[in-house]
Length: 170
Image (tube, rainbow, N blue to C red; front, side, top):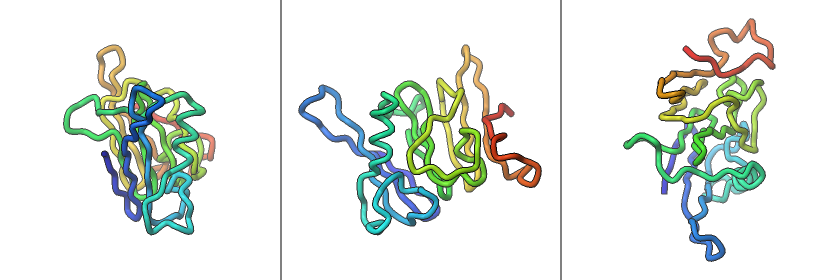
């Protein structure tokens, strides 16, 4: 079981031993403040107790992705929460993001909140990643050169258009 805690929400990844599949299936449970779509499809009326984040399960099936069982670097997590968003690592080295997107912290190109997880575009081979209050950072291994990436719009909020939030190397 892996867990991440945001400002007012918690997400837990547990494994379900499905008898139809050889590998265990990862299932996400979330609870807490239902604002900003941060619970990933959990019923907002029952937000005080853990419940399956149905939107993540649907997105994984639709995108044909699976949740990573371990982080690429020892001691790091496969899931992190910012204040109101969640980032999850897949077995293919991609990141899925959902929750509050108002500051560009989901990294997919605009400022909309997302209940259903989206793939952070153009990121692969994630080595380590983290989420803050209004931003997300990741280190990618591209051709054995590690690159630090950060996304948010808080530093240029007054000058940015909604379609201009993209992952940038720093």
